[in-house]
Image (cartoon, rainbow, N blue to C red; front, top):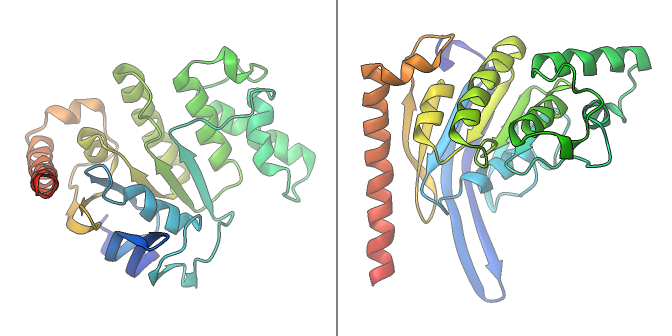
Length: 267
């Protein structure tokens, strides 16, 4: 199903971001226009410093655009909200809390009855494959298991949008592949809208309905590439000729931007 046939969830219109320090200023993002459909999975790639995380943070309400506007379901984004869940590369877990308590922490401000909270936590512990580790503490878990807790904690209060910033960047290749497959299963079960920032082109293609390639300095949309690969996906898809074609095109775009940066740095 293409994004055109679904309701629009996020609209990013003419968005720019300039960072100022004293009299100096840096234009991080310049006039980005994007529409993201409800329940769509969109990956964002580009060179380091192209504004991927800044864009994600503005959608999350953690940063304010210098120009333009971001709306979710037609409402202007001005601050963080419980319609958006975040998962970062750092696990950001409470080391003194068990797996269950870390996940339940997201529900502390809710008005849900205790029994319903317990059931939700149990459901997401199962969903991310942590049954049997409910009473374990973060220091007793591997990196992949910690990130499963972080994903469960972000999803347990039922946000409609999941914002993910290099969530698997610190994991080894084998664990990373398993986490990607896990994320797709969880997404297909919950069908939230996902914005996923990554440096890994294979990961971007494997996960997404669309891959957005950002140009560098300042960041702007260079390519918006629909990924026409059937779902559900298994890791075998990476050997498919279509996958290879997408990868070749995206890597060429990123290489072009990298060469531009290198040329500027030599000036």
